[in-house]
Length: 283
Image (cartoon, rainbow, N blue to C red; front, side):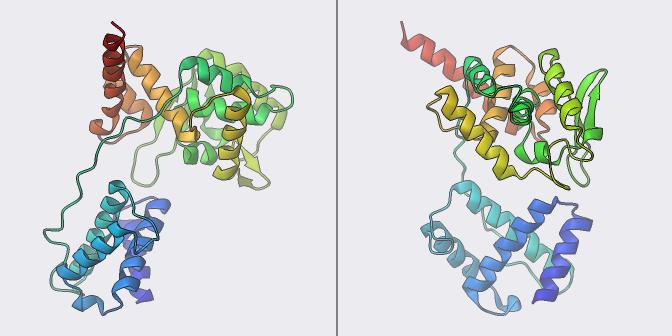
C-alpha cells in the first residue's frame, strides 16, 4: 500500500504538478479513507465511498463535522487517487463516478476597514519591531497569502520599479505585485537593517514559520483594539475589498491575487453589494 501511495505522490508532484501542500493534503485524505474502510483498494465500491463521506459529514472521521469546502476537497482528493489507479491499470473503473461535490455556500469574507488596517500596522514600533511591522505591511499591501510571505526570497524584491515577485508553485506562472510608494521606505529600511540572505523573513537558515506571523498579527490586533477575529488571510481579503471599493477592475484584482478563476475573485463584488444594502437600510 505504501508503494502505491508513494507512486501517487510522485504522480501528483511531477505529472499533475501540484504544490507540496496540495500533495500532502491529498495523501492525508486518501489515508483517512483507507483507514476507515480497511479493505482492499480493488474492492472499494461507490457505496463504500458514500458511506465514508456520510461518516465524514457527521464528524466520525476527523472528530468534527467539516465544512462543505473540506468535504469537497476530500472528493477531489479521492477522485484524483482513483483516476490515477484506473490510469495505472490497478483498477478497472473508479468508484467515484456520480459522486457529486456538495453545494458550497459562498460566505462573504471578513475584512478590516482601511482605518483598522492603519491602526494594526501602526501598533508595531518601527525601531524595535521593524521585522513584524514590515511583514504585516506586506501581507496587506501585497495581498499575500501567509505561505507566499514566508517563502518570499530577497531576490523576489524589486525597488525600481517597486514590486514583489510571488512564486506560484510548480506549473503556474509567477505573478508580479506592484507595491505602493508608502510601503517602499519601510521595506528598504528592513532589508538594510536585517540584511536577510535568502528568505526575506528568516529564522536562522529557514524562512519564518507561518505560526510566528500568525502570532504577530494577533498581537497587533490586540494592541490596536480591533474586536474582529483577524488572521493573516484577513489582510488579503481587506486588500481585495479595498481595491474593489476603489473601482479597480475585477480582472486586475484577479491578477493581483493570483486567482486562477474569476469566480473566486467575484466574491469580493458581494462586499460592495452589501455596502449598498447597508446604506439603504439607514434611510
